[in-house]
Amino acid sequence: MTSLQYNRQLPNTLALPCAADTLCVSGIEQARDAVRLARALGRSLLPLGEGSNVVLPGALQGIALYVTDKSVHEVGRDNEFVTLRVGAGHAWHAFVCTTVAEGYVGLENLALIPGTVGAAPIQNIGAYGREVAAFIDAVHGVDLHSGDSRSLNAAQCEFSYRHSVFKGALRDRFLICAVDFRLSKHAALDTHYPALATQLDGQAPLSAQQVLDAVVALRRQRLPDPELEPNVGSFFKNPVVDATWLRNVDGGTRMPQYPQPDGRIKLSAAWLIDHCGLKGLREGGACIASRHALVITNRGGATQRDVLTLAERVVHAVQQRYGLTLEMEPRVYGDA
Ligand code: FAD
Ligand code: NAP
Image (cartoon, rainbow, N blue to C red; front, side):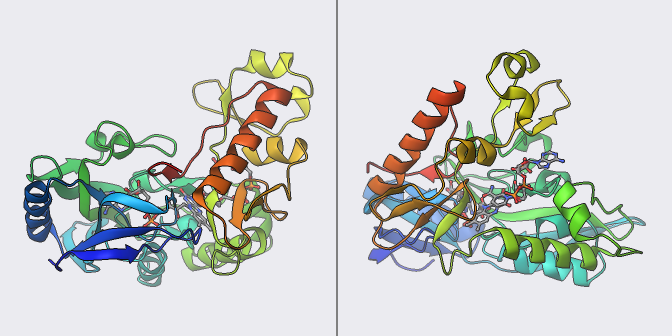
């Protein structure tokens, strides 16, 4: 374990200034040491990765805790599947590229999502019709209250749409140190997502590498690059409504609608925000991206308060026009 580093600026893709004391651990044993140290100091530990799904305050009270392990080990194999154990500190996109280059199918739709492997289970990252939950066999880590190591199987992770037990009962309570992925070379590709199908038009036979390349090209066209326009991706979750709601709301029948297995209908939060005329709306240094209505960018000098005030204005406008309350996707820390 590294020694406690005081008052460090935390990396985050919204480029918000945030100072905190930090600790880095390589894996489970060092994480248990970190729990003992934090307990002795009377401080809390806050797990973080690359900061691509967080809205940070100027100063964080707890100790920011990072896992540095980037290892990849094969821990199981049968006729069909291989199981890979990946350190939480491994970069997500690099891991996806490695699996596809080695001939495994499954993670290609999730290419170019920023962040670490350890954060992928937290909100069950998803894109272009796939969610990571479908490929996770187990999650290994440490309970930050008791200091005990623990492994959860996929059912215990309680994955659902952009959600898991790590955002629920185990929020701030469990440090993920490694994730087991179960992958096959013979799984089917999934290119039903309309934008992806259009991007791939004319390419046959398809390989996972072709799907990955198409996803990367699509994302580069459509999404603001955090290196150039700091952001945390989608700022709001897509709302899910009953069919009766759609029939009753003004303009409901014209909205893009995605039926869910439970009979309800998912709407596009980006479409709702766009149709409230909010693209380009600014609050201090924070701005609704003109390229994508679901993305809040830091145009320079934004504070957490700017970002949250802008988000509140968006929630209010959508509430006024459609009677729907948008829910934020990134995790907000501390007081603005
Ligand atoms: P952080 O932002 O640092 O942390 C996020 C949460 O995970 C925090 O609550 C933190 O406590 C927790 N956490 C992080 N590491 C650990 C750990 N080791 N143990 C326990 N808890 C931990 N998300 C999608 O689902 N789909 C997308 O397509 C997508 N596209 C994006 C595009 C852009 C341009 C950006 C900026 C973001 C996008 N995101 C997307 C959101 C984000 O990339 C993911 O949620 C990612 O998994 C966050 O990883 P991170 O390492 O940056 O985590
Ligand atoms: P898009 O293709 O413009 O579609 C807008 C929204 O409609 C998406 O959010 C998507 O929901 C939904 N959608 C479209 N077609 C769908 C279908 N056939 N079935 C179900 N839902 C459908 O989306 P985009 O903004 O360019 O993003 C492309 C993909 O990358 C999406 O899957 C999106 O979730 C993901 N992404 C996520 C983040 C993030 O931070 N969470 C950031 C960038 C991109 P879903 O979001 O449920 O897929």
